[in-house]
Every structure is written in structure tokens, then in C-alpha cells.
Amino acid sequence: MGSKNKLKRFRENKTFSNVVQPERALLTASDFSLKGKWRSDFFKNENPLILELGCGKGEYSVHLAKQSPEINYIGIDIKGARFWRGAKTALEEGLSNVGFLRTQIELITHCFAPNEVNEIWITFPDPQLKYKRAKHRLTHPDFLAKYKVLLNPEGVLHLKTDSEFLFGYTLGTVAQLGEILYAHHDIYNNSTAPIEATAVQTFYEKQFLEAGKEITYMKFKL
Image (cartoon, rainbow, N blue to C red):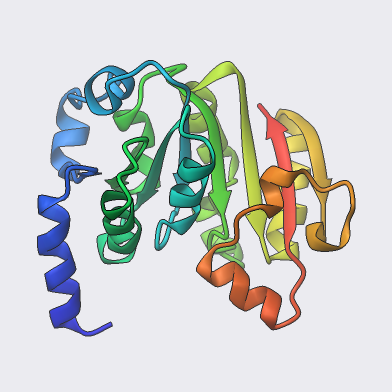
């Protein structure tokens, strides 16, 4: 994507009613105005709240929102030029139950209050294969501890990835910290795969499938 295109998308994001872009300094220095108030102040309802971490182009959040209008969805990514597409599509199609938050995942507890979230989707994150990058994996124990704070007591997490490494790493981590509700290393060749895991495919997921890669999925609680 050219720099002119990125700048154009950044400008458009500022005008989108479904995009929130708090400054890092604001999040870390004070209480964020929407923290604990996403339902009442942003969505104007009391429906369940589901997050997608590292939402990329935002198509997963948009598709989920179309399928379940009775649920609120927020796609989160630091790359606003990417989720511009999802945000624009949501506005064009009149989807009032999906929004986008531009921030680093590490700041997530500054953005949401304890027990505010019902579910979290982690879709095709960077597996951070190098050992020295392990702390940046979105299923590292430090991140899982943050998610546990946000989720209500019955809250669940979903991980979809083409990385067998990250799938195995997360299985081992969750086995020590939580409860695995479902896990399979090839959901598109498995009759027991839950529909929620196969009904929507991201831009990158379609590329992985076309290349013959297996897609792994797990659902778990902390």
C-alpha cells in the first residue's frame, strides 16, 4: 500500500463514527472514557461484547456482526490503514453492532473494564517464532492474564491460526492456566469443528487454504 493511500485511509478513519483511536498517552495516564461503558456509550445497548484481537482488515468482525446482530463486536489493531476496509464496509452496510479500536493489544486493560467482555477471538496472529519474541505472542501468559481480567467469569477465548507452532504452544500454556474446551489442528477436515470456527474466513485465511495449509482452532477458558 502506498503512503498516499495510507494517509487517505488515516484521514477517513478520523471521520468514521465506528472507529476509536485513543492516544497511548491518554490510555496510560488516565481512565479512558469508554472503559466500562462500551455498551452504554458506544453501542447504546446492553448486548454481549466480543473482541477480535489483531483484526487486520476487519472482515472477521464484520462477518460476525452480520451473523449476530444481537451481539456487539470490536475489532482491535494498531494498523488503522488495514481495518479501514472493515470500518468502511460496516458503515456502508449500516452495521451498528461493530466498531474498531486502534491501539496496541498490550494496552487492552486500559481500554476495557474488568468483566466487561464476553468473548475474545484471536485470529491469525504473528506466531513470534523466535524465543526472544515469545513475550509478544498474543497467547503468552502475560497476555492471557490481561484477558482474564477483562472477561466475565463465563467468558471464552478462540484462537485460529495456520501456525502449528503457536497452536501447540497455546495448548501447553492453557493446559496450565485454564481449560481447553475444543481443539483441532485441521478444522476444515474435521466433522466436529464448531460452525463458529468455519463460517467466516479472513483474507489471509483464504490465502492459507488456497496454498494447502491446515487451519488450527481452539476454544478455551481461563
